[in-house]
Amino acid sequence: MQFHLNGFQPGDPDIADPAARVQVSGATGVLPEEVDVLIVGCGPAGLTLAAQLAQFPEIKTCIVEQKPDRLLVGQADGIACRTMEMFYAYGFSERVLKEAYWVNETTFWKPDERTPEKITRSGRVQDVEDGLSEFPHVILNQARIHDCFLDVMRKSPAKLEPYYSRRVLDLHVDPAADATDHAVTVRLERVDAANAGKIEMIRARYVVGCDGARSTVRKSIGRGLHGDSANHAWGVMDVLAVTDFPDIRFKSLIQSAKDGSLLIIPREGGYMVRIYVELAKLDVGERVANRNIAADDVIAKAQRILKPHTLEVKEIAWWSVYEIGQRLTDKFDDVPEAEIDTRLPRIFIAGDACHTHSPKAGQGMNVSMQDAFNLGWKLAAVLRKQCAPSLLHSYSAERQAVAKELIDFDREWAGILASAAKAGGTDAAKTQDYFVQHGRYTAGTATHYRPSVLTGTATHQHLAEGLVVGKRFHSAPVIRLADAKPVHLGHAAQADGRFRIYAFSPVEDPAAAGSAIRALCNFLADSRKSPIRRYTPSSADIDNVIDLRGVFQQDHRELAVEAMPPLLLPSKGRYGLYDYEKMFCPDFKNGQDVFAMRGIDRKAGCIVVVRPDQYVASVLPLDDFAGLTSYFDAFMLPMN
Ligand SMILES: Cc1cc2nc3c(=O)[nH]c(=O)nc-3n(C[C@H](O)[C@H](O)[C@H](O)COP(=O)(O)OP(=O)(O)OC[C@H]3O[C@@H](n4cnc5c(N)ncnc54)[C@H](O)[C@@H]3O)c2cc1C
Image (cartoon, rainbow, N blue to C red):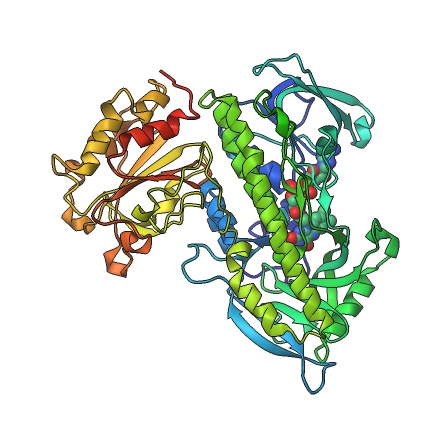
């Protein structure tokens, strides 16, 4: 897809008329007085959360934003493979794949040994290791990602729209309120010209501050961002430019002898490019605004770094100079560590409100969305009375640990770039090695939740070595039994708050009367202890809470759908129609055997439980019914 040839136009490039791409959006009228969840901020974190909660019309969600309308240009643009997997679950990965730039290879440039004032290419690597994810690493403006989430919200059962021009001033929790009360009172100010200064109040059961690095919500719960005071100023520009730099359509990391480093990120549409220029180290407590850096200064610096190549900027679509330190807050909710056993969280923070990163590793937007994905299903499960409210403690525990690891990585990566710069760019080989070795961090697939009530131990990991407990479910290609369609096993997971159980069959005939898969299905369908029976409302479809999928070792032509256990061919909906999409076989035609690819024990088979946010919760023997039951019993509330 090519666009922006004759100038940058924000919005959806599929809409021919540029004016129609930027129509005013948002909810009209006054705010609701009472909601289940109030989300503050329409950045990536707030919109990910809103799009998740919007799937449940029984949950009353409100999202507010101080800006007058949706974002149209600027800010982050890197989308990690793991984030693309999440976008699939939200239903818009294909749209992003079509519109985005794909980062297939990255090039490295350093000063030429004989004429160090000129840069020369020192290396070129594949950006993401083979097989890490079914999705590539892509680049698309944050504003377009926002649009995708806004679209999901608009079309969702809850039909959610943000309330713009509302600034949260402060919030107050009633300490005497019980778990079901709307205990948090929030004061907001209208900032649109017609209503400027008008104060509105809203009461919420839960408030989530997705309100960025200067978060009012974070301050209201007495938390701060701690960390690096050695801030760096960065210049960032999206430009349409004429250049003879040959790698302008590759992500390129350029280290010059004297002028610091520059990062080229080719952008969607085939012509635009983002340039990050490292400008200056700031003094402790200094703000970049004090330096009065102009767009021309950023361009001039970029031109010096790129020598002997030329860069003629024809149009600046967006630019910014900003300072970034690696900072983290110690807890992502309002409950002090010492009170975890006696208090339940009411107020959460997510995204930049809890952690900030340098743009070099492209983590800010990705980690922020993953925070919200982690919190969203948990809030929904508690509000829908599927899980006890104590589950909400796991959000801060899981995400604070992840953010800390990522910030340590980001600091190390920034240090490597800085030391290479100090050495006049001569450490390019070290930079390239580090980049390759740590690709899993930048791809977002390194996240590994520790054992907890939600995440089991590695006791039975040998049964599925490639589906690591605590890591995201690593999808693999399979053939759907009922219609021979090649699909991805992990794409069974939608952002719908459901758990998945993948039952991998031993080598035996799964249809046989005494097969292990049949025994598991019988237990899940009939036993009083079955988590499916215990936690699914009797009025709902059988896969409404826990979605069972079967994976067999035989070629799909060797098995008969009608001979399989009925739980894998459930009858659903008002007409009792069969759901034919629960059973899968290896894709032998393309040489892709999911059992071999994910290290599944062929003799024993296994059960893999996957959380609603796509993380592997547990790997169990196929006949460990007690283990399966006790996993869910630890945090779910019986329905029937
Ligand atoms: C100017 C700028 C440039 C950036 N450039 C890059 C980049 O080039 N590359 C990169 O990787 N990352 C960049 N980032 C960081 C990246 O955009 C963030 O990591 C990411 O957006 C974090 O998402 P978030 O949802 O947590 O917060 P944000 O995207 O910051 O969203 C927070 C939202 O909350 C709103 N808000 C704040 N306070 C209130 C309040 N009191 N009431 C109501 N609404 C409120 C804000 O207006 C904002 O829309 C940039 C950030 C900024 C601000």
